[in-house]
Image 1 (cartoon, rainbow, N blue to C red):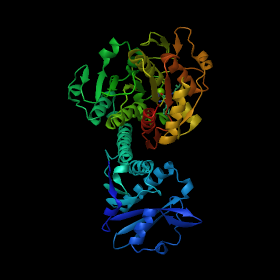
Image 2: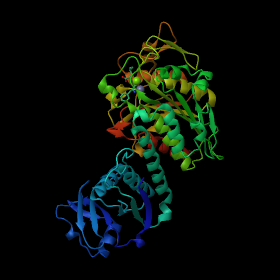
Image 3: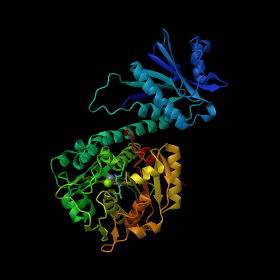
Image 4: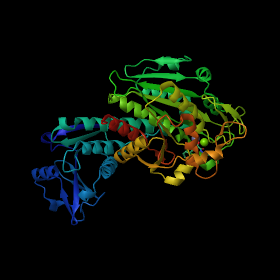
Length: 500
Ligand code: BES
Ligand code: MG
Ligand code: ZN
């Protein structure tokens, strides 16, 4: 991860390798921020030296070579009124890529805004950090930016926002790494060890083959359920989906319970981690299978969110449940028509082996509800291609049974940039999921697939338990993993702290 530091403006030095200055556009001309202008004046470098075609339009860039500093990069921010935090993150990301292509190892930049509002500092850190992310586990890249220095007037005043930004970058990069990892390197057991090592927990006893591990860490307690524990807990749906693969299923349970916390009951996050979804016996087509290593993105987002929450020491009690399986066809796979007794006692008829996500979530949700009586359950899953068809690649589908929490999640979506759109949770859809031979079937009508899945999950949590469901099939992946959901969940919890 690229190192980012805050630097008081007066410590700015002309020796910098590269200085980055942002310019808004007004009446077709560029104008700098106060700081930009100040530095500019000190450099005795008039605006007229800028290339004539640089107007400050959003995304415009102009590079100028000098003696001290060696280079200045002028960046267009567009019209000031339209420069939202989202645009801010976008341009900060672009700067990162542009600088990397220059082969520069470090750069110094001002905050692209006319104030040092904490939110702006956070946007800049997030933009640079995530814009510069690359999955480099298997390929070494020629150029890498190593350090970014951000100039501010009083570093102490924006320290909190700065740290939040850094924590976010770290958590989202961690999630992207997990999701980008090829499926053969990210089996359920490997997800367990990746998760534990990246959460900086001691994982030796897990890898030594202990059947059951209860690992201590000051902040996060982790428990891994392997087959015997899954059987003991009657998690037969998780077991059934995992039956087809020699890589056995796992359930990861994490608990972050700081000594001081504001909620009497925990929030429980449940994340789908299908490490590879081939569809099971009702196998997917070649094309729809090719990116299915990403089907654990919900589980990864839960790990990332808890990592961020713990590093920020948020005074909230939060539990994570991540069922991890492979959905693979083989002689031992579960079959269409099978009837399986879920952990909750409800029997499920398998209408389609490719509708596996809702099955593993069903067991995890019923466990979340019974074991913790949570204040709120939020599940997050790459659940249906129907949701991606409905909302595209930039919005997650949002469902839930609590108006209050639905609205709060929408606000977190707007603030974090991980956008959500509410879809209806209408019981009418359940009619099609009735089974003649079991309490419920895991498929419904061919229409409204995302809603069918949400209604199915609702049957595991019931109406009394507050619950939200996020279908991230669309935004979890855009050529490569996005880390979608981590920022959303973290923002949601930061807002929960502002409650009352
Ligand atoms: N993992 C898929 C959903 C998915 C599709 C996620 C594309 C990301 C991108 C899920 O398990 C699945 O296969 N769903 C089926 C359900 C159907 C068989 C009822 C689907 O959406 O086609
Ligand atoms: Mg599937
Ligand atoms: Zn799936």
